[in-house]
Length: 383
Ligand SMILES: Nc1nc2c(ncn2[C@@H]2O[C@H](COP(=O)(O)OP(=O)(O)OP(=O)(O)O)[C@@H](O)[C@H]2O)c(=O)[nH]1
Image 1 (cartoon, rainbow, N blue to C red):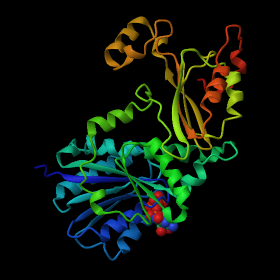
Image 2 (cartoon, rainbow, N blue to C red; image 1 turned 90 degrees about the vertical axis):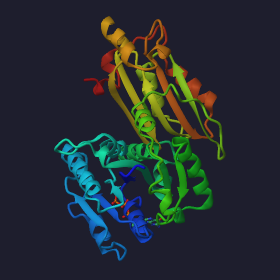
Image 3 (cartoon, rainbow, N blue to C red; image 1 turned 135 degrees about the horizontal axis):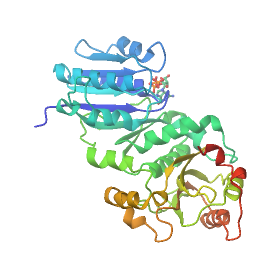
Image 4 (tube, rainbow, N blue to C red; image 1 turned 180 degrees about the vertical axis):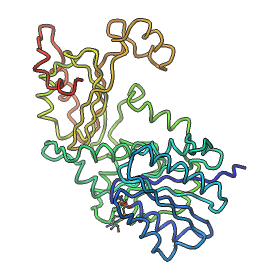
């Protein structure tokens, strides 16, 4: 029998309801002794105070606040040490980690599954990552992600990306604050969230009320598959189109072995079809043939960043080496273009697929196209 302490990691954007969930779990924990690790962004750790003040926070429970803010290496080490100490103390049956609202969800998972303490003890000796819970603020998602007039709001870029990452990396997804939504909005958002995360257990909640056994000791986390799949999430070759499950929400993949003309593609971005709620993938641009650009749009936020080089732009011996280390490279390799491609997953509601494909095709490089790199709108991001 595995005697290691089960760890549940609770992620969710600022204000989604993480502390509310912990307070609820304390109330319903029965005879379990709970170790809680909280990491608040603010100088005053409000979450710590709220938990300490709870009448259900008993003497048998333990609370460890982390003090190093958000994403720094120091915080990661502090987290690893705190988890190990709690697990090794023999004084708790379960550990809950409330990760700060702005931490990448896989970071905490990797620390628990693969991390070491300052003095080199593997965390996996004493504890096991049991469940990754993401709590989503339904009200926020409604306002930040729903197609409006098609205009981007750069204020949302960071938060949307983070919320999407949190949704994409979890075993259990609590869709919270449903009391603030109409039935129709709820059903619609459920379809949207399920497109992003088809495999997690989806539970609608009000004030994070959920049966304890749905988030603690579930044995849902599968290290090998989950972490690896998440690491590969930029690789969309496994993604296939899906069909409308209601509300007209569906998805398709756009793949081409031809680069975009950056001027035409940039102009198209200004007329982004509001029906597309989520787009992610890689892009090949004619003016910068060696650069991989990643695109990530979520609702009204759009992010296009250079993210490395096509393998096809490397030296021959390096390419040969990549074939030995990169799984699946052979499958996507094209005799003329190597791994260069445009590959976008598009998720949306009532999308006119044919029209979008036609518009994107219209942005592709034509044989007689000439574009000066100086006029390339993606040039500024080119180092
Ligand atoms: N209406 C409504 N409010 C909720 C619900 N769940 C939580 N809240 C409220 O939302 C606010 C934020 O909840 P918290 O649990 O503090 O959120 P958090 O994710 O811990 O926030 P940070 O620690 O700042 O990231 C609180 O005022 C909660 O009472 C819900 O289902 N419905």
